[in-house]
Length: 294
Image 1 (tube, rainbow, N blue to C red):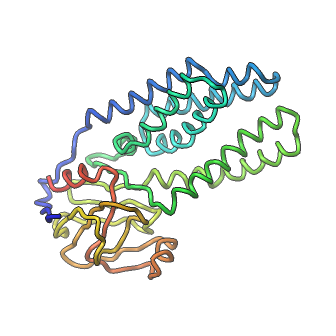
Image 2 (cartoon, rainbow, N blue to C red):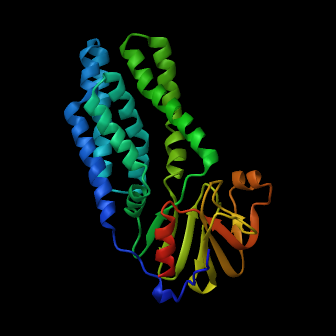
Image 3 (tube, one colour):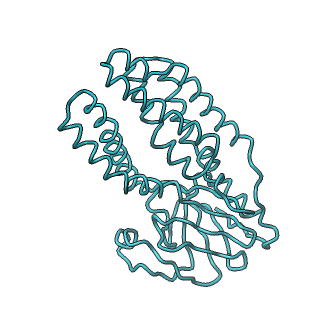
């Protein structure tokens, strides 16, 4: 790929909100409203005992409400809540055997995973004159995140249902596990929603405490070139392990980069490196490159 000059600091544009951003959030919100109208948790409750039905309905409306509120107020925290709850809605809809609910929850699941939706949510927490582009989730973290979510959801929701069904021993154990996991799991899952490339008037910032121990700040004057490519070459791989295209940022002179302990161990190197070239992988790679070069 040809190299793209970064231009002067004054030429680094901050993009205005895109119309697709409003569309994707509206689609998820509409699907979520229709899901409430079909209320699959009520269908499950109708065939359960009164204590179990009460727990199912309470969980159903509680989770539906916090996702609805999160969609109305985009932020990285809202993104984490949506990511945790919406897959549970798919499971509930399938168990309830409600085609409309399954359709709405699957639509919400597909759309919330789109790069435009993710960028819209993380941009909701932006400070001042900055534009955020979410980074792709590293492959080594995808399966552990899914397993962690399953364990967390099963322990809290499943445990409370077992208690309501008078299965006190197993229910209490699962609820206790869920309470203990609540101290760490949401925070760890939230790290995946707090990884972004930030465009500010004076340059760029790479905020990624999953891969980095410290953020990277590169002023426009320090950036020699930015290239889109699938080849890492001699650049330091700061993507955490992804496939496909990425951005390679070349600096005018080597700068210090401090990796997280797990990244340093994975790469088999020291935590502090002096690099002149490094690569990152925004979800909307073309949009990020265009914004930087403008």
